[in-house]
Length: 88
Image (tube, rainbow, N blue to C red):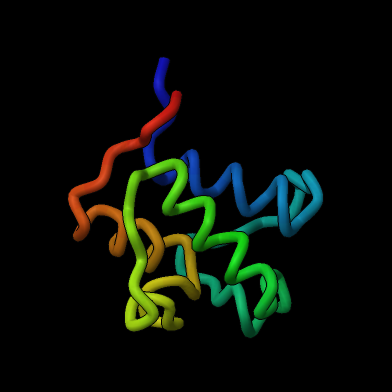
């Protein structure tokens, strides 16, 4: 079964920034930046993930905290772009 967009993003964040720590309670609206989960290099990794997995070409103007600072914001951005997962 194909993962939902939210599950796919959450899994990416847990595996790449929390090093697989599934015990960490990552709320959908928790700031990834303020909680030191993601840094500037991590933002670039996140952008590459979104572009590769959802087929979205992100412009520089898209790479802002309003789009990328929480799971909820990332999900809203991806959905606003009308993207669907490229891979299962």
